[in-house]
Image 1 (cartoon, rainbow, N blue to C red):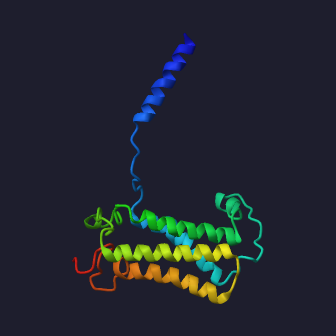
Image 2 (image 1 turned 90 degrees about the vertical axis):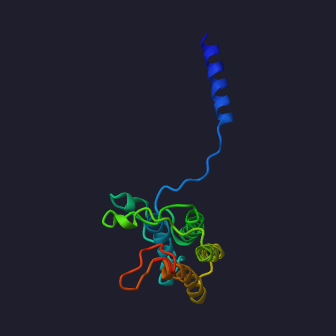
Image 3 (image 1 turned 60 degrees about the horizontal axis):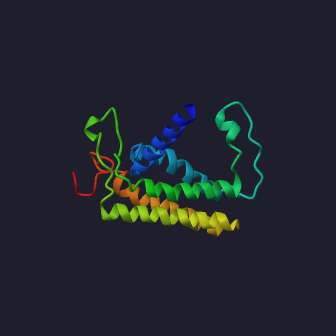
Length: 185
């Protein structure tokens, strides 16, 4: 009897899985959270190569905190490869429909969508993706040259600056809310 029950459970599970529809990726965080959680820390890892050669030895991590214990697992070139992959993959993530930012202190700006359908946004995302790919190829080559570092990190800085100049950094009075397309206010 027990063997028969297991058999029927297996059939039900298989049938349920066969009928399951694949789901589309759904965003979890807003755009600001993706920027702070993925793009900011990983671009800074790459920018660090401007002053620290990835070939130089790194002191072993230690300590009691999680950050201290795991800080030395991926170092040098491998850390830079991982950071570059994060930039490229983050470009994919910021193409998903998501909210720009939710600010408890400014409810009027809550719920504004990231402008993913705009041509300039798509261009900026493509620039980020290309800069991340350049950084990845550079890290894989494992050849440290000051000039290459300046060129590669310059591409990343330019990709960030292009988008931030339009959608984040507002120098107007009053400031333009983030993610607001040009001429939309």
